[in-house]
Image (tube, rainbow, N blue to C red):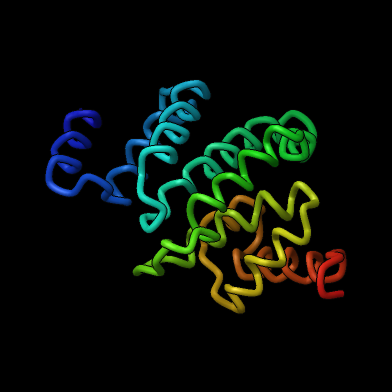
Length: 170
C-alpha cells in the first residue's frame, strides 16, 4: 500500500519531499524494511533528485537510523566516524544544502538539522558548525528528540559542543 501511494504521489509531483520521506520510513528496519532497502532508496533518490529538493538528506537520515540501532547495543558514534559514512554525509550535504541550486523551502531547517546531528556525533565539528551557523536558533524536534530530553536542549548542547571543538574560525 505504501508503494502504491508513493507511486500515486510521485506521478503527480516527482520529487515530493513528504512522499519520499514516508516511503523511506517504511523501508527502515523498525517498520518492516531493512537497512539495505533503506540505504538503497536513500542513495538512489539522492543521485536522481535535483539538488534544489534537498532529498539527498535522506542519506544522512539513513545513517542516523542505523546509528540508532547500533547505539542501543554499543557506541553508534564509531559507525558515524567510519570514513565511508563521513564521505556519504559530505556527499549528501554537497547534493543538498551545500549545493548552489539548493533552495530553502518550507521546512528547510529540517535538512540542516538532519545533517548537523550525525556530523556532530561523528566529531566532524567543522561540518556541523557550518550547519549550525546557518540554523542559528532554528531547531527542529526531529532528529534531536532521538537524544532524549527536550530537542531544544539536545540541539543547544550539540551546538555549544561543536563551537567549542571546531577548528575553522576558532
